[in-house]
Length: 108
Image (cartoon, rainbow, N blue to C red; front, side, top):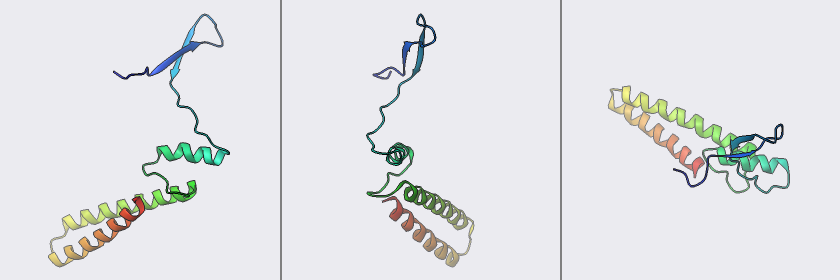
């Protein structure tokens, strides 16, 4: 059971005799302009935190790059599992390690 309620009840604006329930909302972060407000709100939803001084656009581009590298890495792993020849497996494994290194650099 959560410590706090999952919703709250307030008096309806249309009818003072009835109560209306709604979800709990977290307060907005302190921001000087809409761009920084959007950046703070969206930054909490993204899987990786933005880097110091990174704009929202740069952060989104970095997340796109991480996603494409992860898909490429998954394809290389599938190719590695299908491959029978050892020398080709070594080459595919080296490519996979290089891609994983790029992913680690972008997520660090």
